[in-house]
Length: 311
Ligand code: NAP
Image 1 (cartoon, rainbow, N blue to C red):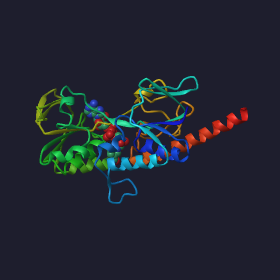
Image 2: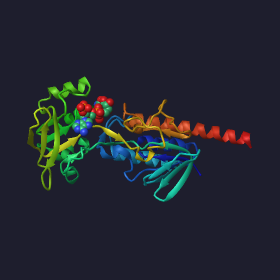
Image 3: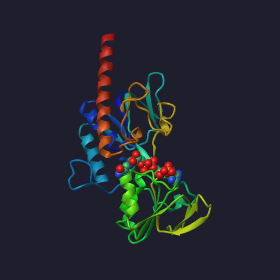
Image 4: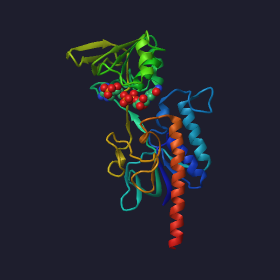
């Protein structure tokens, strides 16, 4: 029986690992095949406190990991494939291996959404991307497309103006969802153009992307836009597939938590982007990992006290 199992190894999961390790709970972290979370897909992180010169995302996550391991966190780079929180037990599977814990911290994060276009998978990494900070620099003086009308799309578009000859933002409506400040910056930018009321139907090119087929949703007309890259910035989906039916989720699949730390199951705590749709920052995820760890520690102390009274 494990004291604590942590699912996920982004800033939330590894901060929970650090705190529970320092509380002598010897946490087991199922870090996932894609270890380190979304920061592994970024380049320079400039807003994580304590790094005034900035730090590369993967380097930051390596430091998180080393720090947690220093205090006894056990990290396995494997995915949790199933959970069963029924019958007052907290069971977690890695393939055929069944593990049981007194408490679980879920910090599985969220993943960028794709459009699922016919040729999207074939051209991923060959022009099609969900990460401007990872791939933008490959498109110096090139034609770049961005899909989406939220803050992420605006942020990506602004960042991509550092590289691209022109950045065209394709949005399915004629009104941006993004905050006013971000919208205004993009609308005023000389390198950014908007393609309103439009949806990307497919991407073309072989072996690398050379264009996109874009449908005007008002007229129905389909146009081919020549472009070297398409950055998809249409939001994120929470990584909760294995938790479905076990924890209460909201309509979008995020874990429901009334206080931002407990869940619908006793002994299961939540941290980071898997419930937080609002802030989604490395530092807020780390903070919530700390909270989840402190709550798990308190919960285990409480369970131990109850058991000793009963004995
Ligand atoms: P979002 O606000 O949900 O926006 C997603 C955008 O993608 C929307 O414009 C949406 O169109 C569009 N979209 C969704 N599905 C689509 C599809 N299948 N095809 C075409 N377009 C599609 O997501 P987000 O931009 O990732 O932002 C999420 C949260 O993080 C927000 O609260 C945001 O403010 C915050 N954030 C803040 C910053 C910042 O302040 N610097 C940066 C990034 C994110 P519709 O508008 O038509 O729905």
